[in-house]
Amino acid sequence: MSLLNRIIHPRTVHYFMKNSVLMNWSNLNKSILMLVLGGLAHVLWIAWYIFCTSIPALQHWMNFDYYDYHLTRMVIFCVLSFLLILPCHYCRHQPFFQRYFPYIAIIFFAVTFMYGGYSIGISSPATIAGYISLVTVGLVLFERKMVYIIFLPITVYLLCAIMLSAWGDMDYAPVFSQSLNEQILYKNEFWVYSQLFLYIPIFFASIVLFEILLTQWRNREKQIEKISQMDPLTGIFNRRKIAHDLAEIESAQRNFALVLLDLDYFKHINDNYGHDVGDDVLRNIAKILSRTLREGDVVGRFGGEEFLIIFEQTSIEL
Image (tube, rainbow, N blue to C red; front, side):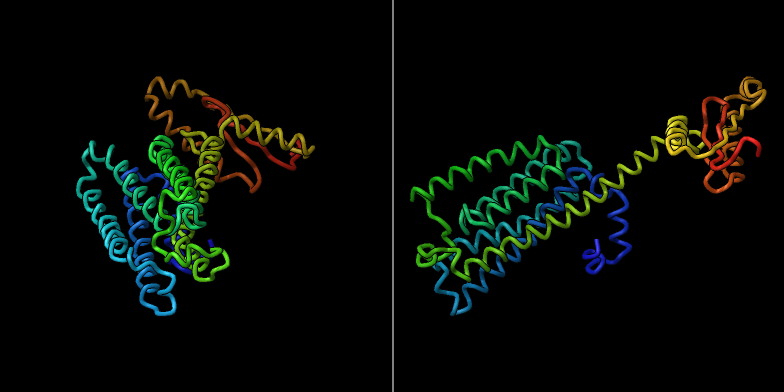
């Protein structure tokens, strides 16, 4: 939370954290978010690739036979990530599009991830950690069915690719030179820093999304708990909340007094003026009682036209 406050305007952070903004988004809007994050990640990966192939001291570790092929596809994936946002925006009101396009967006995202994972090493830390982060965020962000349909084939692909590369039937990390792949990779500083850089976008996006989603989840739970304690008509506590407070007072052995209010002739009001007028009477009584109570006293609707007031630390003589 403090990190977000430094990067983004506090009001924006408060809006996203205190309101269930992201949780209430449609799958289409979540797909747009995913495509934007995927496109930005590709921009960083392309920048890393061009930088590494442009610096003479690092060129020894790069496979230039793979350069044109890899760079072309990375640029295509990056451009498509942003272009796919356009149909999300212009066709967002079509039911068919709303239902099926999120699957297309997730499949596209998965294909780009599989290609990126193959290029830098299918069993590399960036690929495995990125896979775990994306699946975890996907399970929180989207419906379980959508995530399982897409990521189960990815899991099978990763396992098969790891075995094929271990047996030598598939090229391992073709973006790197043969001299690098023949080394003990974790002892090579260039490889270690490259893995960190390639995983940073996924890690940062996952942390931000988790922070937003978990905070909104907690706030929603608090709102649900609060709503469950309120009477929907009068806006004061309901019978359940009153019973809970009484149980706490009795367990703590604190002094208290109870006042039960029953509105006289309330049935007459409903019969002669209608239930809408009766509801207005109940709401006004609740407002009057709430305004006149001391701090710490509790008022709730006990049922029908009955109200119950709890006076804490008060004897019956008062």
